Length: 546
Image (cartoon, rainbow, N blue to C red; front, side, top):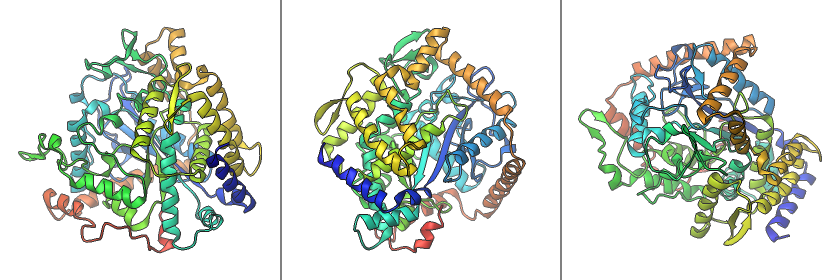
């Protein structure tokens, strides 16, 4: 056993002896689940976001992402897996009441598309804030193409309880600023989630194929499954591979965020937001009377930088994310790599949530040295290999400049995660342990993975990817149409829809300057503050964020 795994066992034992299991029960989980609205025929919906669902600008749980057709359903943080899944199911059921014959497409890869120009940008009203959101999306389309932006994902948001962090800091023998400690160890967790994050698309990837309309004549080396479907035979997640948005992100810019510390992360993103990019200057910023992008810099804003995992802080209204991190440190970590599970109506299961929660704790307590240039290349290469060829017999990955089989490495990760899961359960055979143990079958037999099951089902039924996805999408719609919605939850959603529209109207009425001045003020936030982190904040302020 190497030293890193020995250190991991020592930390786990310390935490167990100190009573960490009880304090871990206060961990918080939140989900952000995207889904394209599609017509009954399976084409991208061109209708506006239903007004009955409230304002996409201000509704806390029902909004849109890149496109007017790309729904985003958000759950509040919850300590119970059942609570967060129940809330997500209720959101689906409520939304379906106002979609008529439209569908919420059940896969990460989109329904039938008819060219990027036909994909409508999300609209948020007439306020400056709304205009900024739409201009940002227009910029994304100009930079990377609109088709890439309608790939849907599921984001897993996770925060450890304050009580656990207090205990962990004590067992580590670290004195001093608790906010600084939490930011430091969570940046270590982020680095480890990148190192071993390839295991997420392997275990849960559900996009091994794509409708041919997504490619639209672009040259790829995807193979032909049938006249309407392209795929890789051993793919797990095309969404996380070379055809996905994240790898298009850095072409021509050379941008890589630094994860050495929270300070270096903020500095690297700030540099990108403030540094002109000749490639994007050719697009223009304000062309005539219309903004084509927010600026011509390497990144328009922080959210443009696509990474499989992000350190996050809850932002105030129109507060820049990097400024929130500088002011208050890391509140939670967002894992962005999970595909939408097409076999599940809500797109994710309790088992998967428990595995991801275990992965978070595993990556927190595991040693986490800084990532050098060579290891960064290894991480990127491993991700693409698993996305494109993860189920390939004998596939090898690279770990610390040494070749290692995916099967061996995945088995080692699951072995270590079992001990972490026992800590979460406070027992040797609780739900987290069982959920982790159930993943072993996928490592032993790749045919048990969701990606393999998708292709096998398509072959058995003689279905294209589109036909397969539409059939399950229709099944899920029926599930949610028969879903029993608690009257109090229904009343909450109706109230929030009304209030969000009123809030949007108030924001529009309060605008007191033109868009040019508004945009300048937004980017000038924090300019007078030293770029160094200001972590000396009131602890009560941090606790109040979630």
